[in-house]
Length: 389
Ligand code: AP5
Ligand code: MG
Image 1 (cartoon, rainbow, N blue to C red):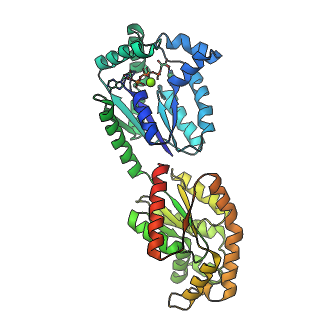
Image 2 (image 1 turned 180 degrees about the horizontal axis):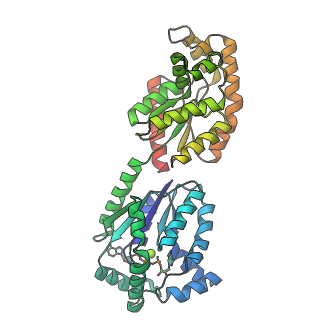
């Protein structure tokens, strides 16, 4: 999710820039001004209460705004992100927004503030009065809106400055020029954000090969639970001793142990674009666990790639590998391979269904040379991740 606030005094161009931004990124638009004007037009009880205040240039009470906004957020909790225009406008609203976003498992990415001198703002608003005829665009009310902004909205700046999210930009010049500045800010934010990708696929589908290639190329941390287990076994650690026989027989290791290893690895490596998880999660329970772990780190699963290779091809690949120096103990007999295939087929379906319902699953054809598959995976992943944020 990409969540952005457009901040700035009346007439600074929040609405204008929002329209341009929405065209580029598919975000849910939340303009409290528009929502209130809609209520006024429909003469709802909230609209009647708001009209009297808006016509005087005063802010409407926090409770009223939050009431109208909350349902819009929860109804769209699966959106690509939210663009807020004219909200939050008070410190209380800023705190409330933090809580509301947390409730739908997301958080704010940036606050873009449009800087425009007061004389220019007044000129723009009086000019808009001729075009749109908004009841609050007249000289007296404009002055009151500025006063409300200075008294109640301006303090919100410090709130976001202290969270390192406040980015002021020059709001003068042509709309296109300003939009270029906005885009620059967002590109920077996107670059800094972390993505987490889960790779799933049958044993032998090439997850390890592909995961490592992609991680190296795009500065992700490749996290394979199979490899973490193997390194514990080789070290002869307590965990290693416990799991040795399960591992060699291709039997799933208890969740508690896997979680410990994954958590430790994530604590050690966190300076990168995100993780590529391979071999984990492989059950719905592990999926929920991973989601919880990532949430605590203020991030989430961005995308799940299903590397699709038919069972027969996987079988052939694994049997072939079993005859090389790279042979794994769990590939040595047909029974072992069948056992792992069965385990995969039964446990992974609920996981696939879960991510499909969240619109996070992409399928990549895993047939072809490793280079060919890597190229397709690269294209699909880069495109999908761009869409996400
Ligand atoms: P709201 O609708 O949010 O109004 P506002 O903050 O006063 O902002 P405006 O919509 O007037 O300006 P804008 O920054 O969107 O600029 P725009 O792009 O239109 O709120 C209205 C009222 O509702 C408030 O006063 C309050 O009472 C209430 N309210 C709303 N939210 C609330 C909340 N959260 N809590 C409490 N009360 C709330 O541009 C302005 C004009 O300039 C346009 O004509 C445009 O074409 C022109 N323009 C834009 N860019 C440029 C440019 N680069 N060069 C020249 N002209 C430009
Ligand atoms: Mg506006």
